[in-house]
Amino acid sequence: MFFFFVGGVEQQVRQVLKSGAARCINCGSRADLVDYDKVLKLFFVPVWRWPGKDPALYCNNCNLIFPQSFSLPPPPPPTTDYDDYAPSKSLSCRFCDRAVDPQFRFCPFCGSSL
Ligand SMILES: [Zn+2]
Ligand SMILES: [Zn+2]
Image 1: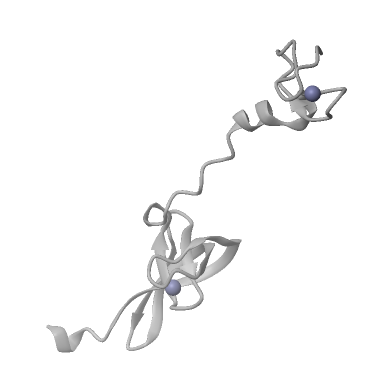
Image 2: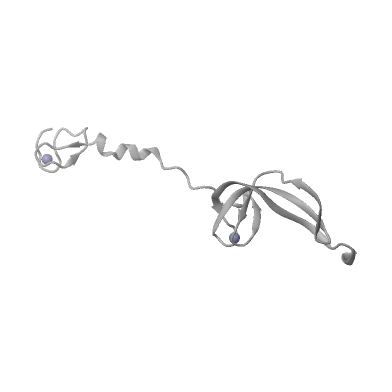
């Protein structure tokens, strides 16, 4: 049986949707988000081609196509807590010019009333 089947299914990139969308699970280099076709080849001749179900990730470096679910999730967005520490919300002391919590009534650095 093995000798009668010279061929197989290959995946071929049809279109790059987003380059550098993830990291390769194999080599760790940049992988592109792509649309791909599955191609059935017999004796190295494509005989049947059909589109892949979902966009997949393709690594240029090691020619690997792998599902998006295999890739690591993207890093979480920066937390909005950062706003609490933005300089625009802080007050600076009139006397020593250091940043002071606006809720303070006295400067903790020089003791002046704010
Ligand atoms: Zn790779
Ligand atoms: Zn002060």
